[in-house]
Image (tube, rainbow, N blue to C red):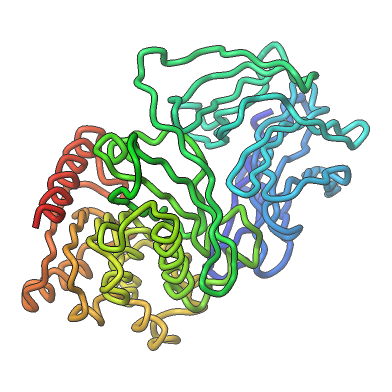
Length: 447
């Protein structure tokens, strides 16, 4: 009814990246709080669409990964979805118009599946849709709503993509497990090369998943290992024009979900906490070993590429494992965690504390060990770095210090400074960066 506001708050977590949900009335008075204890996040999703219904759909990590719960703000009643027997992360995307069903997205082993949960009888049934990725992200283009939701006629509209197909709007029958049709597609967009899911074994025996796309022809191929940001995020199959550029130019493109990624269980995600960089680099080494053993790539033709936390891993790998990598491309990276902590925004400080287990003053040694700037003299492979002047997450001062050190040591590092923020700017800027990346790698392989 527009008279209640639910927000997520870090107050309970002591400034770390865990949340409670607080509900206010329009006079600014707190009327309810939902909290599941230290180390657990409870985040609000949306109120029921039914008039005078004060049930709030939320998620908690206290049940093992993201799981939906329903909280009645007025009665203080809480309901868990007892009939939900699904593995992985479960995100609620929408209520049905009558408030009796919930649209859920299951993410498990880097795959997505849609389900409808019936609140009357506590049962869930899957929806039919093609293999690929269903988007659940909210943003300005969806008015703050999920990109997949109940339509006005109680079908489900789903934003879907796979590696060869740009984003497509599907209409799914909410009652059937067999029917779906294309609602809207971009018919003139060029198709991409398909990718396949690969699982390899890391150096400690842990299985690690990734997505591999290869150009036409016979291997071995020069290969890009792509590293996502986060670190608590993951790569799913989907149309990736930036990855397809590399495939179009004869490179294999291998995106890996290294330790710290979401969607593979809490132990997998949390193993990096307090020791960032170690297990991620071991997983990157194992990905390289798999490529060579399978004949997909030559040992001296494997390049690392990544942005944000992925950019950090690129630089860390080039100073810690210099003999393994032909070159690296990093965007929006942290090279000195302690200096970055001083300069970054409060949200990034919270993430940093949760990764390390404390502040730089409390844990100076772990911060130093995790920072590539302190091993700069070990770098020997060519490195291209894109960094933004107005980035509040990967801040400019620490990268300026790294640049000065690289120049003093006469290291093969090329810097490209952008007048943008952490997102690295507009589509035109991304296009210019792609050209620069291709020219850089062509020069590396020609030398």
